[in-house]
Length: 79
Image (cartoon, rainbow, N blue to C red; front, side, top):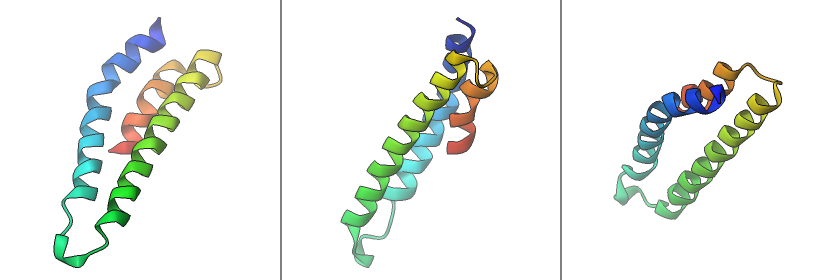
């Protein structure tokens, strides 16, 4: 229950970081070309963040990581 509470506290920070990440990939100059490369890179980065946040959550549930560290690590990494 503690891990779920910390994940709930960290989720706004994680979502703000994902907004920044999405803006970094989508606000490129369209005249430079390679828009599809940036779109694929943005989708890949989103899946990577999702995978890493679930991985740290699993480590927190198993006791391999401290609960607070498992909850706040994805949010800190994204920022």
